[in-house]
Amino acid sequence: MARNKIALIGAGQIGGTLAHLAGLKELGDIVLFDIVDGVPQGKALDLAESSPVEGFDAKLAGASSYEAIAGADVVIVTAGVPRKPGMSRDDLLGINLKVMEAVGAGIKQHAPDAFVICITNPLDAMVWALQKFSGLPASKVVGMAGVLDSARFRYFLAEALGVSVRDVHAMTLGGHGDDMVPLVRHSTVGGVPLPDLVTMGWLTQEKLDAIVERTRKGGGEIVALLKTGSAFYAPASSAIAMAESYLKDQKRILPCAAYLTGQYGVDGTYVGVPCLIGANGVEKIVEVAFNDAEKAMFAKSLASVNGLIDACKQIQPALA
Ligand code: APR
Image 1: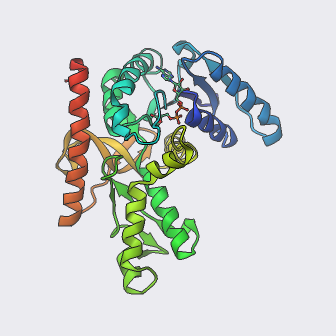
Image 2: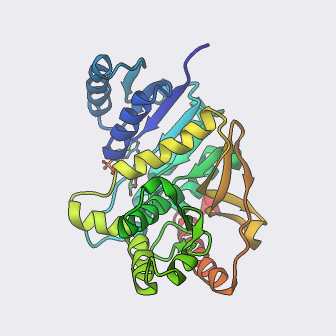
């Protein structure tokens, strides 16, 4: 059986890390595409030269032409610009919308059967625009945010409680902005919901509130430290988990920015919800029952996403 093919649009910090992880996990052959000539080629060669040491078999190629992504099974998009200190994800909208137009056209022409994962920010609006520009079915175009935001939430909880990250399950839904919705009631440590851990005295309510707040601002914390760009290791790991679930038909339930058609009372917008990812892409959207407070947080986050989508429509009327 031929190997799967993974195309990475954008060969920057996240793109390079994606290629490294996809190689180490032997997910398939890898093509790195970028508009800066030499960078995708150089990274592909460098990574290929690591393969004998690591012991993985994968063809790695760099490209500056979209023809190279032809027949890709998975396309992961990081093309665009990242945040600098003082910028919000939303500040990237104008520049990255134009990038999505070019990328969407390239995917439409050369990889129309792929499962497409968008990482470019502002995430929910960019994945919405990418689906429109590419014309691919909405079930095959998803955004990576929830796995990352939930991983941050899980890590902070594990660190605070002194337990293995493996035993912490957490879910963060809504848009990928500072008003995202970390779901405290639906997150567990060793199977015990977080509110029960507070009652048991494992965690104070103040500490839990601080962790929720740190999760919401997790991306900004990294930007402030790095000063020259934004997070790339954890975002790459998160997108690879989604790609692997698709390629291996694992049917994992992962929080992803997915196109809603009535679920959660939302129609025609991308926002973060738990999705079952299998060989057909987004095979099912899980509708979590919210209480009033969660409903209000989700509505606020959704309003921010809709604001960004409206801004896209203003800039590019063809999207309206
Ligand atoms: N087509 C292809 N590649 C492009 C295009 C384009 N039209 N425009 C820019 N790029 C490339 C850049 O040349 C660069 O190599 O996208 C790459 C982006 O890489 P980085 O600047 O290192 O950014 P990165 O940290 O990888 O983040 C990429 O993901 O998390 C988001 O906010 C982040 O939007 C940003 C994206």
